[in-house]
Length: 534
Ligand code: FDA
Image (tube, rainbow, N blue to C red; front, top):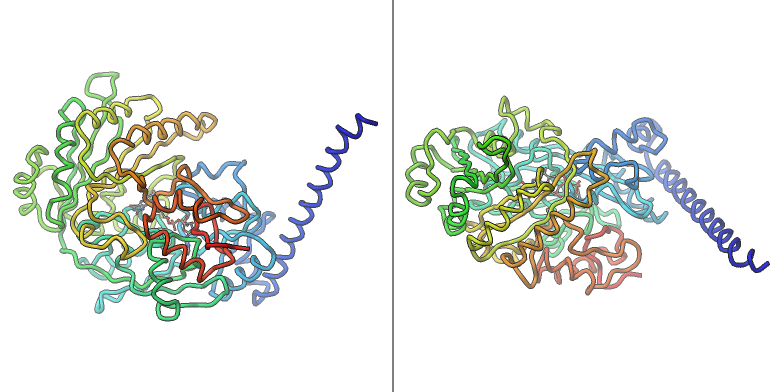
């Protein structure tokens, strides 16, 4: 009897609880779908909008926008359904039904979230995928555009380039990145020194809030409009579309790449770059990419530092400028190519430049498995420090590792820290980011690669921003802290990651969240929590 009491009863209890939970889950799942079907206009629409697990297209729709395949394994939690709305009323119904039946909603635009938060959750959830919201309307006369969140950066750039060579938009370089997540977190690219961030050029937006109301800048008010321009997605509502200001660029720009490696005195040149890059004229952007490559000595590896630049002008003006300001680089005319701004995006994205149609190809940059982290650097790193991190690239876990250094200064120096939620402005020499990748067949050993990047990050601590150690929201990193995914997260707990991404702007973001979504309907592991939630 004692035996029964102590070993079988707990087992029975677990079975009962699990069956009850399973029943509740199936119940809420069924109820959600029933609710949604009732709200959608007709049955032919339903088959184009709701993808349930038993739908033959479910996995292909799910996988179509997963960039980091670390979150695309059989063990990755999958949504109960994927909703691909065709019109705004479908989104309003999805909000209503998921709220009513207690399901978490994950909003997906381009699916490039570094930690997969737009399509993975540890609690029962549905994905709202904006793949049908991808219209781009360019108005060259007024130098503005409306772009829907489900469009990619490439579709936006293609739309601009189809009309003019002398307008551009200052956002990221990977054509397949989604507008929705990118604009929500700030968004930077090769025009950062001249024009700042994508978010700095948003002048209106269309948003659906937790009550299903459709708001524009005027009706949402300036606090919420401030918050959605950099305060992160999946927090304040679903942004359907953005009105942006386009920026002028010359019809011909120049790009160059100069590669130096450990055998070519690269430490000294990189050390020098830190004093020069942020002070160059703002029409010159020279970033740095560091990788491991084969050495000229057979069978050996070395570390390559690529200095890659965009100059908003012609080559004849560029060469004397670089020779005067950064002679150590040894820039020659044969390193340079003239092209249009849209082509320069492909050059930086390392995409083939056969035709601008490539901007529309969502698979132009291969999907990979990776972990990434970011930092901001305010004082030049001494040569000894540079030698230390360059040597870590020779370790065996760093075969698919890369460090990117993005120069600041220029426009970033002029914009006040609290202008938008993105706070990393004046006083930064550059943004540093680190990424480590591995092959699919090495997934079982992913721990050793993740340990490598965490060791790299620890090494960098001496040389980067402190109190807080700042990080870029769009380079999402769950190592720096996260919310409780069910239940309330306190302000103190969220401050651990919140101040790193937003510094003092985190306080205002919490106030806005408390005002517009006090029940915390829009949530994920790093969404802004309201001050208290039931
Ligand atoms: P995804 O759909 O995964 O969404 C990201 C987050 O935003 C999720 O939390 C999601 O729920 C939320 N969200 C998405 N759409 C929303 C909407 N309409 N309303 C509300 N919330 C929404 N960054 C950069 O600044 N410059 C760069 O050059 C690059 N380059 C780059 C290259 C590659 C290969 C990757 C994988 C990533 C980048 N990034 C980048 C980072 C990129 O800006 C970041 O991952 C964006 O959040 C991606 O936006 P997506 O819409 O693609 O992601």
